[in-house]
Amino acid sequence: MVQFGFFRAIRGSCFGVLGTAAILVAALLAPLTPPAVAHEGHDDGAAEAMTGPVAPRVSAASDAYEVVGILHGDRLLIFLDRFASNEPVTKASIAVTIGDAAEAVTAEPTADGAYAITSPRFRSAGPVELVFAITGDAGEDLLIGTLTVPQEAAATPGVSTPNALRTWIASLVSPLWQVVLLAAATIGLALYGVFLLVRRYFVRAAATGLVAVACVGLLFESARGHGGDDHAHPPAAGAQNGQAATAAVDAPRRLPDGHVFVPKPTQRLLDVRTEQVSPQEAQRAVSLIGRVIADPNSTSLVQSINGGRVMAPDTGLPRIGQTVKKGDLLARIEPTLPQADRTTILEKLGEVEQLISVAEARLRRTRILVEKQVAPQGQLIDAEAELEGLRRRRQVLHEIRVEPEALRAPTSGVIASARVVPGQVVQAQDVLFQIVDPARLWVEALVYGEIDPATLGQATATTPGRPPLNLRFQGFSHALQQHASVVQFVIENPPRNLSIGLPVNVIARSGEPVTAMIVPKDAVVRSPNGEAMVWRHQAAELFSPQPVRTTPFDAKRVIIAAGVSKGDRVVVRASDLVNQVR
Image 1 (cartoon, helix red, strand yellow):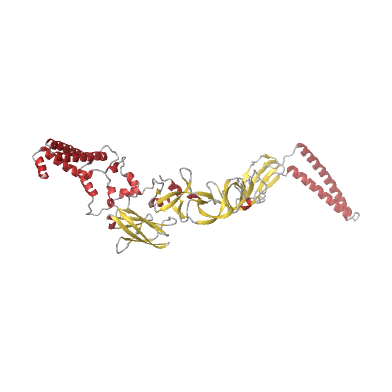
Image 2: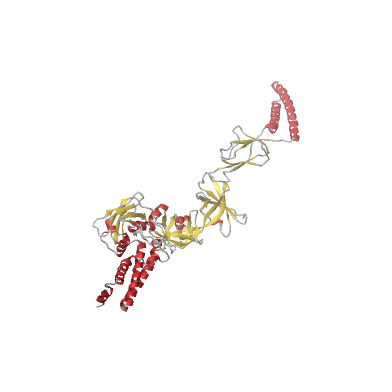
């Protein structure tokens, strides 16, 4: 009866036709109304994609391998790495069994070091079990994972969903016309409700009013989704087949809880490497401030004894960096004598010349007498000895007056410093040249505090921009200098470009051995608040920050005293790049 009464009420009335059309339009446009949550706070869907993995993914791991598969349409890109070091495995055989398939599909290597398989099964929505049979250098392994293909990424024909119906209807009516038609339907329902109220059909008027109120709500939501919101856009074509979602999830990002998501392709690009930490027996180390010095047995200083004017040899003065051998002539020093000394030398020289003349005449007479056997042979020998002594005195006087002082290299090595030029007047004991052997260098450091220098052992030294230097403990002084003990180390195989006086930081082992976790120094980074931390490889594509407490071990490694456990995978290469992801 109600139905017949209703149709009788609307039959032959323009208001009835208008109300019927409004109800039909509202029913058709209801599926197009976007959910309120989708645009809460002007969210355009990009933030939703960033909050979780959108691209279909599968991962599995064992003690030997770690595999990650990323789905692109019906193509699965497979990344195979070593579990402990995160090193890519590019030469392996991977056979993938998809679901309940009878035969496995062999993955083909790609140009970027990954593997790929293609299957129409990836076009169907739902979970798919994948079995990876791996044969590589680390042995054979069998990994099992589940790939969940989302509904929006599936493209199988014949699958009808509410989203598909909404997409089909939305393709027929533009967003602007959707709002216009929904507004017209709302006005039509309102007029029809007034018409029923005037005719005293109160129940029908109330029902029509409720439908009109619902249409007002739909109109409000549709206006929020399509009108005046610059962030609202229809889904791109790539998002329907999973391409846009994959591009969004493949970008590294920092999650709200502080973890960092780094996809496998980015890990390959950054060359991320990890290391499974385990307790090791090590000796604690101390940090000392030192400098490079020359080996006292292989260095020498060239000085003039009397001073004078510098004269260059025929080959010229040696330059800095020139290699010289022991005994090579470096320079000549022409002595400078005062006038009084010159006069005294000339007087002495004249006196000696006179004595030589008298001695020569006496020697001639004595020789004649000895030949005639008048004088004994002893007088002849005395005369010859006296003449020889006078001649030596004359030679010494000549050398003092004219012979320059020859400066020769006391040791073999390289000229480290040269402070002379031809014609320069130098004083006695001035350091003119320094010769060092670059293959024999030491490090001198100062030990403060309660550290016992006698307990120092193997050490390393670091300098900015240079590789670490291996040191061997040589000894220490028992006398304090500047309230510190001086310790010396021998540099083993020093580089040729090492300079004397270069400041270095010495890491020397001291104390009793301890059991601790040892990692490379590059693994430790600083958090925004300045706290030392490492990045743990928590999952295949997920890294978590872990605060740690460290102590020095050597120039390349540190001891983690607290913060990590046995078996944790710690990033040891590119940790600073992971730390910069935002």
